[in-house]
Length: 294
Image 1: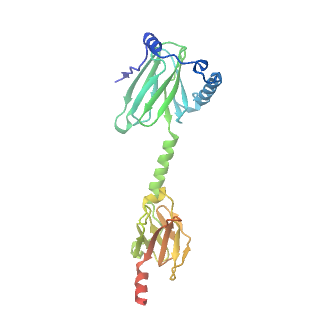
Image 2 (image 1 turned 180 degrees about the vertical axis):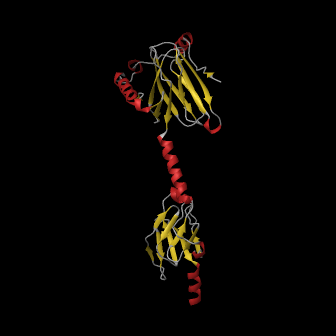
Image 3 (image 1 turned 60 degrees about the vertical axis):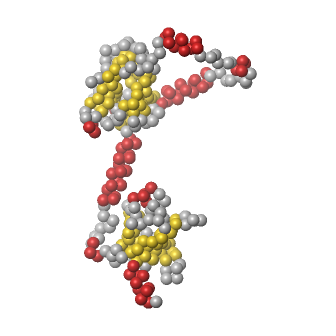
């Protein structure tokens, strides 16, 4: 079902009444302040900014009769319309319409409808001018973004429809897919569960990046972190010798794992300077050997 918007508009009489009751603004001379520069320069800057932000339909961006604009915040999108022709402005599937506002609600018919259902449900804002030679702006707000459009009416030629592509959303989706793939990928090729030694203890401070576990395959040591490691500063790894001396060790980062190309008895993850956070990773077998030797 198509809904026609009752967009708020002031009649000439109501507008005149409001103007009559508003207090007069004092001129610079009346207020005793310094005179201000003529607003012409500022108006010119606004006009130049609007012109630079306006994008026109491009032949290569049409899919059949629908113009697909790349969405960028703050861009003004040109829409060509014509009398007795409806132009369909299609929002992103799943996007929830908030409000629609137009500078001219008298000479334009503006409504909305939906297509599809569930995840594919899509809102369409429909516009139609009463005459050629009209121009106004249209602002559409949703639960995801706002759209700024410049409507222009011609004699006969109208855009059948327009929609948007969303490069930022595509980038986010790609990054999430890549993160899922990395999380699902094996930490190293050829690892056999029966060959892994999980006899490691994690002790010390409890930061958000505190390791979940550590294990080795007889050649390499793997330290597994929670997913929060990806959104914060990663701690460097130090090996601690029998005298308590710490030395920075080389390691690789793969997904949520630190991979050290050697075995160790004690290592520490340290982060910070004045108030240093320290988490110790100890091979339990090494502790037992130390106790037997004491």
